[in-house]
Length: 141
Image 1 (cartoon, rainbow, N blue to C red):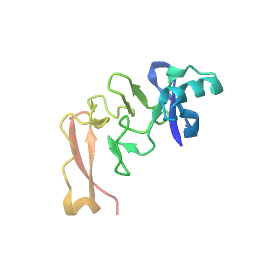
Image 2: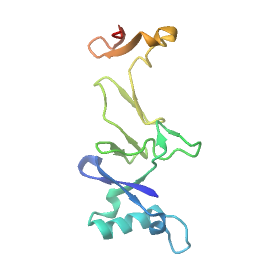
Image 3: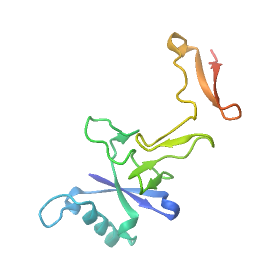
């Protein structure tokens, strides 16, 4: 099955549909995204260019089955399609965070949270937007 994101205004994903791969075959019998887009336009009354193929197995720029990652992330409702970078990405979690177009994920301006090591069972780091820092907190018992 192929998956296609239906885009609304501002390149926001408003729906994701599955499509039988046989409905994507061109005249040579090869899967072709544009054939799938045309099929979806004809059967869903939505412009072909507003359907973008997405990969169910891609997240954070990695294909979870070891294949080739496709378009950064699987598109979900509310995701954004970035045509210039050919990726889908989720909602920005904090105003200061920046989008990494290589992994299609948002990152803090100071990098990832520190490693907790053995403390990971009793503590976690939370982002503090006011201080632009990772704050260590204790988990409730």
